Image (cartoon, rainbow, N blue to C red; front, side, top):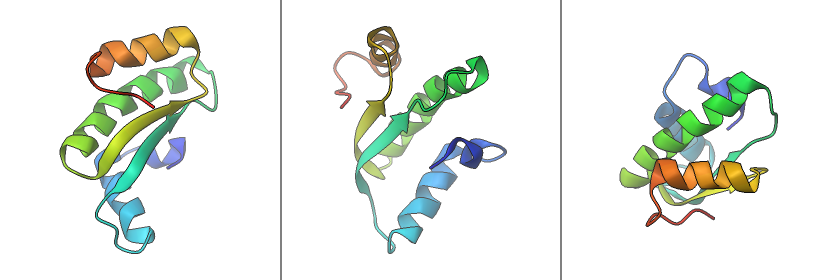
Length: 89
């Protein structure tokens, strides 16, 4: 999912749509939050995404959550959001 997919509709809807595009899959092994840009608004959205990604995982749409292009400090923030006991890949 690209950042543009998040504007105006819940992320979970985008996850469901992506699963349909992948051949009506029930879940993905890894739902990845990639920090491709560093503008402040998009950075905030990345962390909002993590809460929605966690909901997607709880609903069974993803087995694991991953982050990409996060600094060490941003990865720690992600752990703070999701909880230390939830593995981030």
